Length: 157
Image (cartoon, rainbow, N blue to C red; front, side):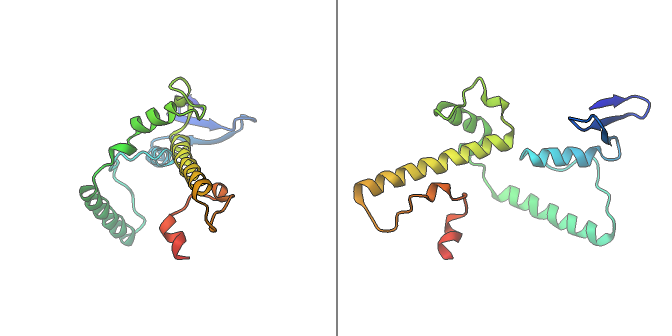
């Protein structure tokens, strides 16, 4: 990425070919910023720049969504166990290859993914130990390979 002073924009280029693929300027900055925040699971609330709407229906839907988000933010309490500092601390203490020296090389998405995968595998290990001690007929040796899903929904299928 390079700064173009005459055009007052950042020029983006492909990593390998250095071919110009786009630009970030005042017209698309908010969209790019919002996209990067969403990709990293960061929510900062309303944007400083008011959005542009294609029509009145789009404005109405956006306003309803904003009301819902404000209402749900008031009704939900944050879970201290899921705060970023706690996740970093817990994941760097287990021997999963991450330490306080290298854990910051992960993106937010990778950090959360590794944290949830570790928790899932830990639960699978407990399940394995329970089976080895008590037996049972519904044990799936390959269960740890399944993607993480909503357990309650899976039971209903």
